[in-house]
Amino acid sequence: MTSSFEESLVADVMSTEVLTVSAEETTLMAWELMRQGGYHHVPVVSGDGHCIGVLDAETMAAVWDGGGPDRMRMPVSTVVDCRPVPHVTVSHSVAATARAMLAAEQDCVAVIDGKQRLVGLVTAHDLVAAVAGRRHHATATQVKHPALYRIEPVLPNG
Image 1 (cartoon, one colour):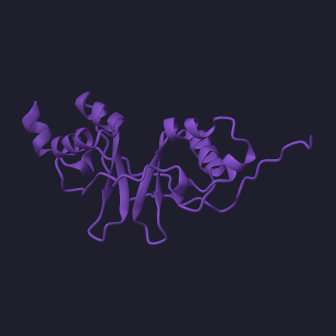
Image 2 (image 1 turned 135 degrees about the vertical axis):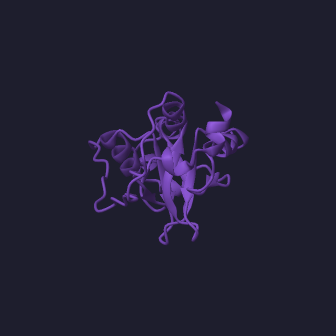
């Protein structure tokens, strides 16, 4: 079984429909986009498409510790993990990708192109789906940058 994953490529298992946010986006907007879209991982990208971190649901839940509206207005750059983002390319093997994920102690890795820009993600879910024989094939990259509006909390005066 291992040899087939040594031969299978990231392109066969990666998620290409990826929602992203900019580093300046508010945590409230990121949370709403994650919640509404059903995303567990949201890459934070720079203006030129480089992945600077990945927000996950656990990190976002930790932000809501009762800090009030100021917490909701914080930019995601203040809460995203500042460790280097583990990454692979579409030509990496699935097994090498799993090893990178384990080495980084992360449940996802960014997939980047030759210019270091984000083109997808491989999550633990993607790897389990591959093991279960439910592989999906990568299509045209659909990395979404939806920050077209802002959500601001409105709290009663009191």
